[in-house]
Every structure is written in structure tokens, then in C-alpha cells.
Length: 448
Image 1 (cartoon, rainbow, N blue to C red):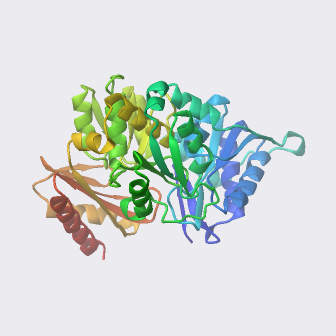
Image 2 (image 1 turned 45 degrees about the vertical axis):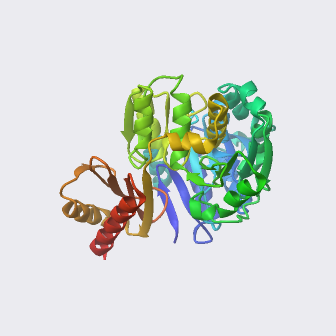
Image 3 (image 1 turned 60 degrees about the vertical axis):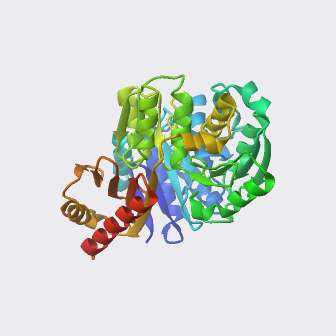
């Protein structure tokens, strides 16, 4: 059975762990958690989404919820809609960047943010105990279909940038939606910003044309098209469009890590305050915070942990190195719409090429690897790494992070996949790759 259940939500393989009964029970647990209140429901473009939606609607109605059905929409749009409609919560049907056979559910609180630890644990308790608060026939919930669902999200993003300045540049953009939910409204955002847009995989049917995680090896077509068309920038979204990777005008993949760094460089120049990233994010973000005189904090990995830390320190900006920025003025959720707008506004403000802006930031190479490892063996892997690298400063709590003055390596269990992640960063590619390879070898030996 392939099913991952945590405070962050649910993911599984349709037909092998993710069945209608369990989906309905999860929805009943969520409906119980929000006490039968109003729930925004949306989904990414996966072909299995309609089956999942039907099962989820049944569970929500059985607990008396009013369902606001947003249809196919991005995950950040779902978060914005929760606040816009003052709903009790939201559910996004998505498996993010997981392969096509996967789907899942991502719950949101009344704040339009992912559930915090206490809320997530309570949801899991209700689900485990099956302590659902079901209602009688006369109190069953209702369904209302929303229209023009992306408008509140787009309007909020546009209010935070200089639209006239961006429009004056008439940027040529290639957008890779890869048949995910970004195809529904991202072109509308770019049109509002006066861009000439070429869209790859615009139909949101979940029939991915390449492996859905927006990393370099999966975006070779985007890089080629940017060069062929002479575009100013290429943007790639994951299937639910909460993450963004970027290709510069030369066709060079500059990645997900620089998405957050570039956006922070733009935002923190005028909006001073604390900046929060997770413990697996490139140290270039710390450099950007120092450049703008802003306090810098790291949280444990996971969107919920970043949001919790942002709330704790009153952050003005935050995010994760997987291409997900979090701007409280839009919502406490990773958001590719805001990323796109901030990058374009930054280019307009500096009147420069994207390659020059990216190259002006401190240069590091970050290398990410992953391998199958039972969660219960992660502690053994961490202990082995600590013994191997005795000269490093160790930080535990979210797996293990080892720091030296000019490099770092981290090993931790994924929150969303049955894998262990090994991440290393250093000033040069050879050093980063060597450090990552050495750490992987130690982990493999330890968990055999």
C-alpha cells in the first residue's frame, strides 16, 4: 500500500492505498475538524481528480459542510479563496509533483494556511478514531460552484507590483504548466502584466509531458523553447502551481533555489522585516537578507513549519528552496503567481537581463539526492553521518544538518514521499557534488 498520511495532508497511489472509502473518511474527519463549516474545495488537473472530488464532497456533505467548489485551481488560489470567502477551511486535491498515479488532499485552516502541528494532529486523531460528527438528512451540507475563481488571487498579486512598469517592458515569456492547474489562470496573470506568452502544456488534464517535478533534467524542452523564441524568461510550475522554477533568457536553468532568492531580493529592498526559510534552503537567501539589513531565520523543513516560524517572528517574507515563496500579503501558502510577478517586476525595476540579475547574487551550488530508506532508519543514518563528519557543527531536530564555514549537508526523511533526502551546498559544483556523494555513501552503508 502506497499512502502517506501526516499533518501536512494525504498522498497515495490511486488503486493502491488511495481509495474512495479512505478519501471520504479523510473528508469526514476534516468536516468534523471545521465543525461543519464552509469549505473551499479545488483540485489540480490530474485525471483522477474527479473521482477524488466526488468522494471528498460526500464526506464533507455528511458532516454538514457547505462546499464552495472552485473546480480546477492552483493550491495558492485555494488558500486565497479560503480567506476571501471567510471559510472555515479548504481542501486542495493534489499530489503536487508526485507521479501521475498519485493523488492526495492538502488541508487549509480558516487562515488560508496549511494546518499547524496542533490542527494537523487533531485531524489525524479524528481520522484514526473515526470520531466523525455526522449529521442527519435535514442537516446535510450543500454545494455551490464558484466562478472566476482566480480573480481574487490575481488581483491580490497585482496590487503588490508596479503593473505599469512591467507592462512597459512587454516581456516575452514561455510558461510550462505541464498540464497542471497552472494552465487555467497563470496565462491570465501574465496577460494582465502585458506579457507575450507561449504556453507549454496548457490543458489542465494531468497528462504530464515530462516528469512533473520542475528540476533541471525535466525542463530541457522549456530551455530549448526559450532559446528558440528569444524569450526573456521561462517559468515552470509544478502540477498544483505552488512551486516555480526559472530559466533565463539564454536558456539556462537557474532553478528553484534562486526563485526564492530573486523574489526576496526584490521584496526586501522596499519591505523590511524578518525573512524565514527552511533548513534545506540555499544560504544565498541569508546573503540576500544581510544585503537588505533584514533579520534571517531558519525553520524545520515543511511549509507548515515555515509558516509557523513566520508567524512567530512576524516575518514579511518567507519560503522554501523548492521554488515556493510565501508572502503574507497574498497568503500563508507557497505561491507561483507571486513569484512570477515579483521576478518580472524586479527585471523591470532594474532594467536588466535575468541572467545578469541571477549572476549578481552570491554563487553556490546545491546538490540534492534521494534514496529509499525506511523512516525508522533515519536516526541510524544521522548517527553515521555525525560520526563521519566530526569537524562540522551539528544541528539536530529535522534530521541532521552539518555546517562548515563554507558548506553544509543535510539528511532528513521526506514529509511527503517514502524517501530520505540528502542535500549539500558549497561554493563550487565539484565540492558540493563530492560532499553529497560522500554523505549518500555513508547513509547507504548505515541503513543496509
